Image (cartoon, rainbow, N blue to C red):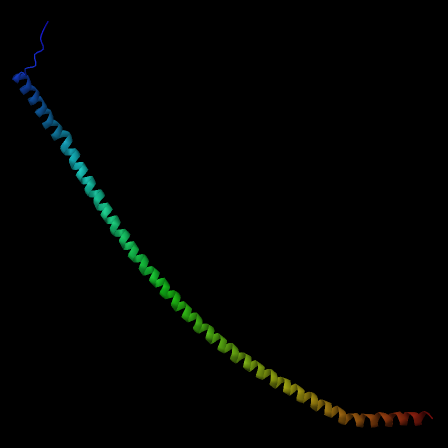
Length: 145
Protein backbone atom coordinates (compact mmCIF):
# COMPACT_ATOMS: atom_id res chain seq x y z
CA UNK A 1 0.00 0.00 0.00
CA UNK A 2 1.03 3.46 -0.58
CA UNK A 3 1.70 5.78 2.20
CA UNK A 4 0.29 9.18 2.66
CA UNK A 5 2.96 11.81 2.53
CA UNK A 6 2.10 14.64 4.94
CA UNK A 7 5.36 16.47 4.53
CA UNK A 8 4.83 19.89 2.99
CA UNK A 9 6.53 20.51 -0.30
CA UNK A 10 8.10 23.99 -0.22
CA UNK A 11 7.75 24.50 -3.98
CA UNK A 12 4.03 23.80 -3.93
CA UNK A 13 3.52 26.01 -0.86
CA UNK A 14 5.51 28.85 -2.46
CA UNK A 15 3.55 28.49 -5.72
CA UNK A 16 0.20 28.52 -3.93
CA UNK A 17 1.30 31.51 -1.81
CA UNK A 18 2.36 33.38 -4.97
CA UNK A 19 -0.98 32.58 -6.64
CA UNK A 20 -2.83 33.67 -3.48
CA UNK A 21 -0.87 36.95 -3.27
CA UNK A 22 -1.39 37.63 -7.00
CA UNK A 23 -5.13 36.99 -6.61
CA UNK A 24 -5.19 39.14 -3.48
CA UNK A 25 -3.48 42.02 -5.32
CA UNK A 26 -5.86 41.76 -8.30
CA UNK A 27 -8.97 41.45 -6.12
CA UNK A 28 -7.85 44.35 -3.94
CA UNK A 29 -7.05 46.52 -6.95
CA UNK A 30 -10.14 45.68 -9.05
CA UNK A 31 -12.86 44.90 -6.47
CA UNK A 32 -12.04 45.80 -2.88
CA UNK A 33 -10.67 49.34 -3.35
CA UNK A 34 -13.54 50.49 -5.67
CA UNK A 35 -16.06 48.89 -3.31
CA UNK A 36 -14.55 50.65 -0.30
CA UNK A 37 -14.53 53.96 -2.19
CA UNK A 38 -18.21 53.59 -3.17
CA UNK A 39 -19.11 52.53 0.36
CA UNK A 40 -17.27 55.53 1.83
CA UNK A 41 -19.04 57.96 -0.50
CA UNK A 42 -22.39 56.33 0.30
CA UNK A 43 -21.79 56.55 4.05
CA UNK A 44 -20.66 60.15 3.71
CA UNK A 45 -23.74 61.03 1.69
CA UNK A 46 -26.09 59.04 3.92
CA UNK A 47 -24.48 60.31 7.10
CA UNK A 48 -24.57 63.87 5.77
CA UNK A 49 -28.20 63.43 4.78
CA UNK A 50 -29.05 62.01 8.16
CA UNK A 51 -27.26 64.86 9.89
CA UNK A 52 -29.04 67.36 7.65
CA UNK A 53 -32.38 65.64 8.31
CA UNK A 54 -31.80 65.85 12.07
CA UNK A 55 -30.90 69.52 11.75
CA UNK A 56 -34.02 70.18 9.66
CA UNK A 57 -36.15 68.31 12.20
CA UNK A 58 -34.75 70.48 15.01
CA UNK A 59 -35.33 73.61 12.92
CA UNK A 60 -38.90 72.45 12.26
CA UNK A 61 -39.50 72.03 15.98
CA UNK A 62 -38.18 75.54 16.60
CA UNK A 63 -40.38 76.95 13.84
CA UNK A 64 -43.38 75.06 15.17
CA UNK A 65 -42.84 76.61 18.60
CA UNK A 66 -42.54 80.09 17.04
CA UNK A 67 -45.71 79.56 14.99
CA UNK A 68 -47.57 78.30 18.04
CA UNK A 69 -46.47 81.36 20.01
CA UNK A 70 -47.53 83.68 17.19
CA UNK A 71 -50.91 81.97 16.90
CA UNK A 72 -51.46 82.31 20.64
CA UNK A 73 -50.46 85.98 20.54
CA UNK A 74 -52.75 86.60 17.56
CA UNK A 75 -55.58 84.82 19.38
CA UNK A 76 -55.07 87.02 22.44
CA UNK A 77 -54.97 90.16 20.29
CA UNK A 78 -58.11 89.08 18.46
CA UNK A 79 -59.87 88.40 21.75
CA UNK A 80 -58.95 91.84 23.06
CA UNK A 81 -60.00 93.50 19.81
CA UNK A 82 -63.28 91.56 19.87
CA UNK A 83 -63.96 92.72 23.42
CA UNK A 84 -63.19 96.35 22.51
CA UNK A 85 -65.43 96.19 19.46
CA UNK A 86 -68.17 94.48 21.46
CA UNK A 87 -67.98 97.14 24.18
CA UNK A 88 -68.10 99.93 21.60
CA UNK A 89 -71.04 98.28 19.83
CA UNK A 90 -72.94 97.87 23.09
CA UNK A 91 -72.37 101.51 24.04
CA UNK A 92 -73.46 102.68 20.58
CA UNK A 93 -76.50 100.44 20.82
CA UNK A 94 -77.38 101.85 24.23
CA UNK A 95 -76.98 105.41 22.91
CA UNK A 96 -79.16 104.67 19.88
CA UNK A 97 -81.79 103.03 22.07
CA UNK A 98 -81.77 106.04 24.41
CA UNK A 99 -82.15 108.43 21.44
CA UNK A 100 -84.90 106.29 19.93
CA UNK A 101 -86.69 106.13 23.27
CA UNK A 102 -86.41 109.91 23.70
CA UNK A 103 -87.63 110.48 20.13
CA UNK A 104 -90.51 108.07 20.70
CA UNK A 105 -91.51 109.78 23.93
CA UNK A 106 -91.30 113.18 22.23
CA UNK A 107 -93.42 111.94 19.31
CA UNK A 108 -95.88 110.32 21.71
CA UNK A 109 -96.16 113.54 23.72
CA UNK A 110 -96.64 115.59 20.54
CA UNK A 111 -99.38 113.26 19.30
CA UNK A 112 -101.01 113.23 22.76
CA UNK A 113 -100.96 117.06 22.83
CA UNK A 114 -102.40 117.18 19.31
CA UNK A 115 -105.17 114.75 20.28
CA UNK A 116 -105.92 116.76 23.41
CA UNK A 117 -106.06 119.98 21.38
CA UNK A 118 -108.31 118.37 18.79
CA UNK A 119 -110.54 116.98 21.53
CA UNK A 120 -110.90 120.40 23.16
CA UNK A 121 -111.59 121.98 19.80
CA UNK A 122 -114.24 119.35 19.03
CA UNK A 123 -115.82 119.87 22.45
CA UNK A 124 -115.92 123.61 21.82
CA UNK A 125 -117.38 123.06 18.37
CA UNK A 126 -119.86 120.52 19.73
CA UNK A 127 -122.05 123.15 21.36
CA UNK A 128 -121.93 125.35 18.31
CA UNK A 129 -122.79 122.38 16.10
CA UNK A 130 -125.66 121.40 18.36
CA UNK A 131 -127.03 124.96 18.20
CA UNK A 132 -126.67 125.04 14.41
CA UNK A 133 -128.34 121.66 14.02
CA UNK A 134 -131.11 122.63 16.45
CA UNK A 135 -131.74 125.90 14.61
CA UNK A 136 -131.76 124.12 11.30
CA UNK A 137 -134.15 121.50 12.65
CA UNK A 138 -136.48 124.09 14.11
CA UNK A 139 -136.41 126.14 10.95
CA UNK A 140 -137.29 123.07 8.92
CA UNK A 141 -140.00 122.05 11.38
CA UNK A 142 -141.48 125.52 11.40
CA UNK A 143 -141.21 125.77 7.66
CA UNK A 144 -143.20 122.58 7.18
CA UNK A 145 -145.90 123.47 9.60
